[in-house]
Image (cartoon, rainbow, N blue to C red; front, top):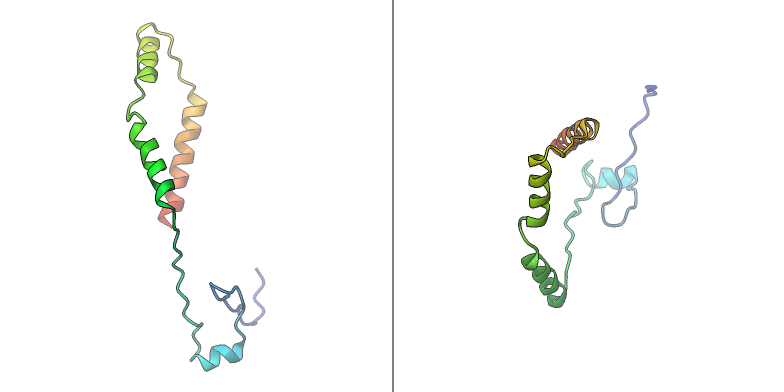
Length: 101
């Protein structure tokens, strides 16, 4: 990065996406205008009820999958893909670090 002594770019207004001029900033006491970043999402009651119904009817534990894995472990057929497991562990760690900011 090259240091040039130039002023950094002005932040854009969240709602309009427009850049404020330096004159606008000086009129605002050097502060960018405050804009709420909150957004709201509305869903129809029908859509909400449909989603709720799907979630309620979904089993918390997939008994068929659990039984299949138990049988494979018991018979010695369950094989762990070590590279895939390590990759998922690394990806999960990176995602956790990103979410912390």
